[in-house]
Length: 114
Image (cartoon, rainbow, N blue to C red):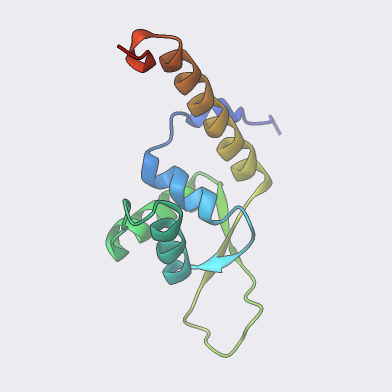
């Protein structure tokens, strides 16, 4: 099996990246992902349920996340998700790409004081 190149999926949409960052600390369910994204962005990004589950579907199809075996069996309808090893590599590659983009912008007049 050929190893996939994480950079082949870049750039991620901002919303996809936010969801992956929300999953970086471990498995969680959809509602908690939405709340974490809202908190991490200071309320600037509020994902609708439809947007979130569209992103989850794509991340599952691309092998970036997987459905996690739920630790709590009290509510079988609540699905939890977690990053795959490849998904973690893709998220790291996207973070590095964003850092490089910001470093480039900082070298230009855009950030210089008048």
